[in-house]
Image (cartoon, rainbow, N blue to C red; front, side):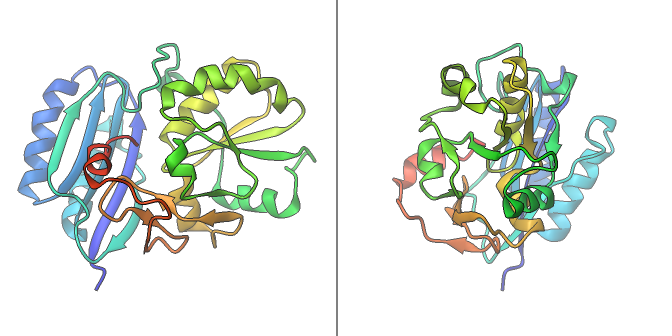
Length: 261
């Protein structure tokens, strides 16, 4: 029976008290017997948690009592077992590393498009102004190999810090088109969309909630394959159930990278 609730969530918001929050959130998660990873940085929070639904939602409800986290909207999926081995709370320089300090999502987001709207655009072949729509995958190459939107642009990134130079090399290809950046849960494509705007690309959107929210709110049409996830489930299908990896990775490497997004 799939009675373990898995959530992923992030929020760009200034956290000058990240070091103090670390111990508080670790104790709170341990008290609720949760497993997963919480990443904290001055720019915000990014977390992946699993456990009984009451405990997971209780953790989120406590977080929401802090006004900075009041609008958290986790992506949810279910599994039969907890896909994490332990509970980690880390403080890092960035909750998703881009090495581009001028990109500050907490100071203003790029426009977003809902999963339902993106599906409609892909169905009709253009956006609501008649422009060609292209999807841009901001994930690492091995993640793209497990599944992606049909016809997506894939720059074969081995790490997210490669995105800015790749964008500068290819940005002229987006002239006259609407670009929708996407990733697993929304965090990478949010930074990517802001950078694209800063680089002068006019019609840019981020997919709200990423692939996981697209699976949650649509039938998954126009997405081929599974979505790589950084936990013991490996990959999720469009119904958010576990699927086998097309290209299995060494388990040690896999688990070390559970905080990659």
